[in-house]
Image (cartoon, rainbow, N blue to C red; front, top):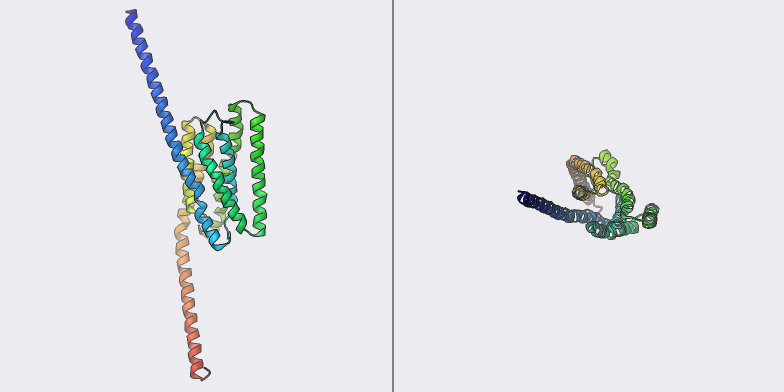
Length: 277
């Protein structure tokens, strides 16, 4: 009886252990899949301003676009690239975080340089006054985390806390134009794709952080998720109004142009009849 009991116990333990490892394996695969989708969404988020900056290059003017979202996104990319490196994290456990934020650094720097090139003298001064503190904050954070803390846990907590503030600011940065959107009832200077891909990225990285049991990755996206929904609701509210208001304005311009041509033709005809031409 003892032998049978021992065999049954061993079989039960082995089945429980096998089930645990299977769940762990499936959990890792799911986390990796969500991380890959999060990378794709973040790549689209970082690349979304390409349409905006193609317009800036074409018109050779920054118009009323704000550079704030791109500078804050650069800060976020700097901090989370550092967070994912083996200096802070344990090995390459957060490799997807490193890859996408490394790409983000390249894209955001490109956008900021284009903005700086076409901005007015006042705009260039404003960009410089914002970029320099961002670089200083990153350097100070990297130095403190590398030399003041001697284990990965405390380094992750410190860098993640600073990154938390940067992430919340990044997701909230498109809100700088909300006042203008509400006042003008136009979404011309609040790009749709920036808000939409912000929604996708925040939801996926929130899921990735929760699956990884990493609240420092999940918590900023818990804030970014509702903020991006608010931006999309605002866009849907004023998008049709903007179109309806633009069309009559365009019609009025065409109508006025037609009237001007008719008046010019009457003047020319009158002068001809009077023998002045």
